[in-house]
Length: 220
Image (cartoon, rainbow, N blue to C red; front, side, top):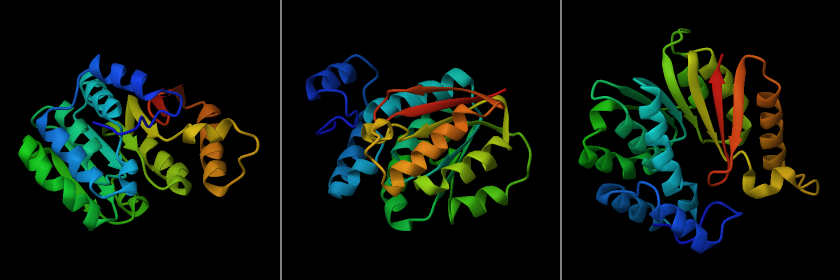
């Protein structure tokens, strides 16, 4: 399912053991993983299998009906969230790439969840700002350009219901956020975002060591 674990702190053997002891990807999900893998190195942008299972479980546990995703890539996380929604649930996907999202769309159809997904190809900040400022979302997933995280967070938080949850990917950044020698721009953006969430009195937050780090934010 994955050549190497995205979790920088896990050995391949421990990662494989973990996958075997959770809900594993089904046939359609495996096909999408393989289709994405054929893209080469950029396939690392796809969420890890354990993240997908986590997103489906989280969606179901919240009883989510309205969800939003920023950063769709080839559509694996979208498929997993949509799987967790009821039949009349809706997922809004925000992305700028027709090339990458086109890979995922046939798999949404094959999995029987395409009717739950609305894909908008435009800068996510524009898409989110154009939405009514109403607290309608139950769940959000942010996995996109790191400089944009604070904007996506604020726009979604304003439209998230109380007790709704935002999941944010890549918050550990392969451990570089904790390395004082790492001063590159991307690492600094993630650090600044993590500091922002930790200091935000509007939410409760927990950072989980899933894959490259996932922060869960609950709106108070």
